[in-house]
Image (cartoon, rainbow, N blue to C red):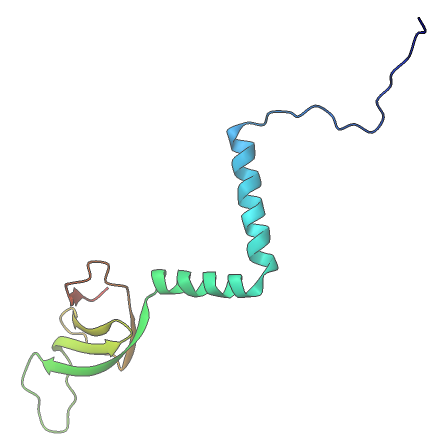
Length: 120
């Protein structure tokens, strides 16, 4: 019989089994690259993060002064402030001495049923 020499050219090296940390870092890197390469995804992710951290815009509508007002002077301290916005009507009870804002950002009410909240 003839002798043959077999040589493999251009084959990939054997697969190295990476650890869990390396796989996790590669996955995070792929997700970050995908996020940065697609502007719409980046904008939607930024908007979702803003809403979750800062809140949604609300307009002040109703308030009740803690003390009786004198003619010509504004209310310096309120019992409650009622705001209307993307989450519907929200009632906020500010600290003593605070007044209501005309426009404010209120965090998302994750409890859903309760519309009463305190000032952050």
